[in-house]
Image (cartoon, rainbow, N blue to C red):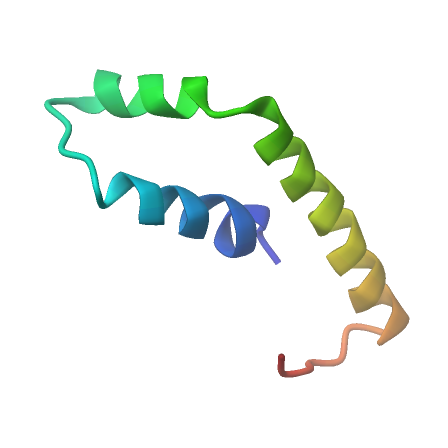
Length: 63
């Protein structure tokens, strides 16, 4: 379970699809300007998901 797979990248990709960038530096700037609250929410969700995984003893469940 990688945090980027379920929180970070899907939301960033949806925003980045709208914009055109001339280089990596512009992409980095957008990420650096992203509100820190966005990233802290992702960490909190990760803790919740890890606890859920522990509770079901690692068994797979569908959404």
